[in-house]
Image 1: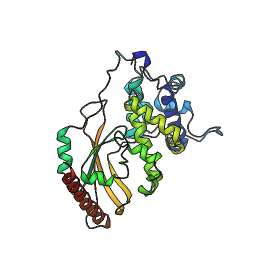
Image 2 (image 1 turned 135 degrees about the vertical axis):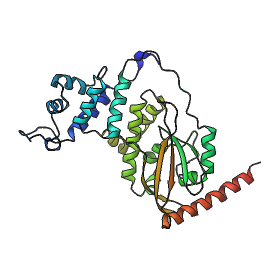
Image 3 (image 1 turned 30 degrees about the vertical axis):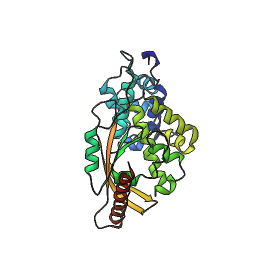
Image 4 (image 1 turned 90 degrees about the vertical axis):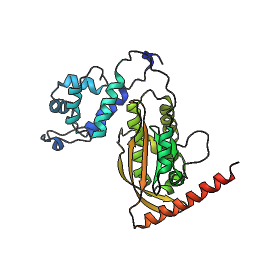
Length: 297
């Protein structure tokens, strides 16, 4: 890709800053309500005052002109808009992506899962473990991880994709006990990755596909919400064993700044019905794996 052909992210910058400003009220930042407002949220001049910059300068920034802006100023804007940790990182990713490229980006090879990581996955017993890239392609899993995500493994060419399943497969509505919440997280993860890696053509193609085919995705994409996904709880309604409430922990195991390779482990609280169902799924997965190996010539 020629440096001049880098994706223009000014619209993303404009919409991100405008949506963050619109969600705040004067009371949120300790300002008087003032006269009647024609639009929700803070005015640009109010954000400029809070950030300690001129209204002209902030207006230019909110129009997408972020190139050359110092980290100190971006930090000030982030504080004024009360950005979360994920939103703060996203703003800095947008600024980094907007800088003129000194050279054309190298064509990147697909992210591969190191063999040692596959060994680690296979050594995990009692917990489901998966590895996904920033586009939410499932690249590797232990037997229980593959069993947990069995509805996502459709047999289509290429790695299964969690986002495509979430928004385009009707089975997702039954698989996630709270589909809306899960969809919010998925769209926010893709938005975060788009800020981090704007030159990822496969990611842009995926976003274009989902935007074209899924009104639910388009609505969520327009919110510009972002998310860092490290730990929490998820509820699954697995077609074979039923509902499970699982805790998860994720870690980025990529050794490159412009790559994302995340390993996630799922487990259940001991002594619960979810733990019993996860153990049942593990038994089924182990049996299925053994039979598959016996059938393989």
